[in-house]
Image: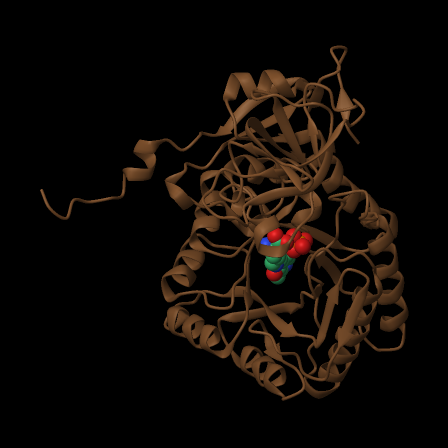
Length: 430
Ligand code: LLP
């Protein structure tokens, strides 16, 4: 998993991590673009083997910057956006709007208007309010927009387990059990402006087993068959959402994309065979699985605090501002010394961030070789929901982002400076 060069330094995308840190400064988030492409292509290759129609729609909330949208476009992918900001990032990246899906449980009128203006390919409709807004915005026009109905499937998956409940307590999607989903279906089928291409459901994130997806496929096919009998409508697409788990530390044993996809397609074919439905296309929305392990956070080590017989802290120049996941979700990461990632450990340290909060700990109890101030520490697999959830807490600027591929490093997001931070402030007294 870890690659080194002849000097024994960590390399990312064929670039020396120490050079990257020195050239671009720290904290720095570096993506190995080859890994991003590889992951994306794993999803495509697995589907290609099954011969069914599919789309891989990258969930850009995991990392929403122009550079990744451009790579996904080059890889022939689709893109999910959940806000006008993510949508305009895709526009700025030159992403084909026909391949964009717009998600969200509270899209505003302005956002829906923007999506229609930009000719976004699909709107994943979440609720009745959104149906009303869309009808209002399209009233009096000859326009039609492709929509999917987001259903709350009553299945929630976390790692290896999934829970099936009659009714799910979720803010997302139309509830099935109470008849709301069916009511939404009737409304969409009666609409002049909304063209229903199928159903969507998302069951969770960082999922390590395929059983939740199998349950989802069964449920959606059964529902589709039922509604086909009642309303004569059958979905062209079943969108099963994202959630494919990745390896953060040695304790995580994720499945490969093909393990998920082959089982999903086997289940789909078996379930469809019991009905009069045609085989629908499957769309998936991986976010984390595309960018997670491709991302590395590089930090410079500074202060050290040894509490005898208790703990040694080493502090780095980033932390919860660029990676909130350890504080927010108790997420576990692995860190290594970029100058010598393969060296045997001589100490166990807790890697602390620089933010004014005790909970700002990036990695607990990390074995490392000897470290000194100025050394570069790499935290692995920070590519998903790190930069995208970054904040300016303590008025610290967000890090720069670099894409590295085949030994070439390119700055793709500039480091935020103090003047960037103050740019939106106005004087109260002057
Ligand atoms: N599709 C939908 C409708 C979603 O809600 C999500 C994630 C995805 C796709 C992508 O899921 P992924 O493949 O990345 O697991 N901030 C959290 C993760 C939140 C995920 C929200 N929805 C974290 O850092 O773990």
